Structure formats: structure tokens, C-alpha cells
Amino acid sequence: MGMTYASVRIKGPKSSEYARVLVDTGSTFTWIPASVLQKAGVESTSRRRFKTIEGREIERPVGEVLLEISGERATTIVVFAEKEDASVLGAYAMEGLGFEVDPVTKQLKKVEAFIAY
Image (cartoon, rainbow, N blue to C red; front, side, top):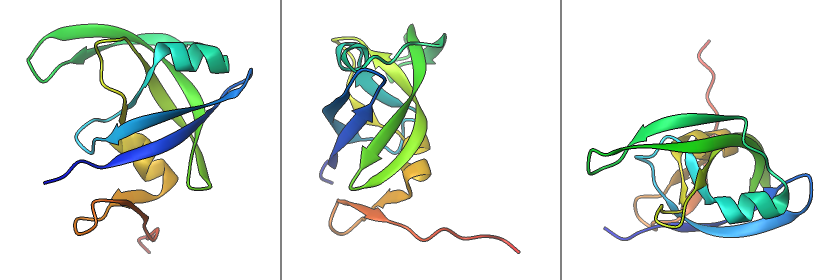
């Protein structure tokens, strides 16, 4: 199975920055390099603990940011990734933006929003 990447625009108080991220439906949150978030003027609001795939526990700052992909915008939680961390688009942001990974093309695609009445 191939990997899916996306170009995201991070809109902060100082500037808009761009990052290329791996789409990771197994990750809850989006991880953006701390240097990119700081350049955009994004500030951390708290710290969270995470468990890595290897079972290690790490702690990282988190904050909120406006992300944009293909003209769609949503406010989401981001993790301030360190140099050894991957840059990923997580499920929380993907769902907020209204995207899913197309299993055939391996690209992001818009999804219909359903309401249960």
C-alpha cells in the first residue's frame, strides 16, 4: 500500500506557512514541526503525553491552529513536533476538514457529511 501526502497551510497570527505531511489515519492528532508553527506565531496551550509505536512515552506541546487543504479550512489541535518526529495529518483534522483517503487513488478526497435523523 502506498503512502499519501498532503500539503497543508498553517494560518497563524504572524504568517501562513506550508508543510508537507504524511496522511496518517492511525494518528489522532496532526504533528507539524515546532519551527513551522513558531514561525507562523502559533503558541502552545498545554502539553500532552503520547505513546509511540515502539511503546515509548513522550511529551509534546500542543496548540490550536487553522489548517487549510485544497481550499477547505478548519481549526484543529496540532502537536509541536520535534526533529525526530514525523510530520503527519491526523484523523481529527482530516475529519474536521471533510476529507478521507481514497483507497483506490491513495489521494485525499472530500466526503459527504451525513446527519442521523
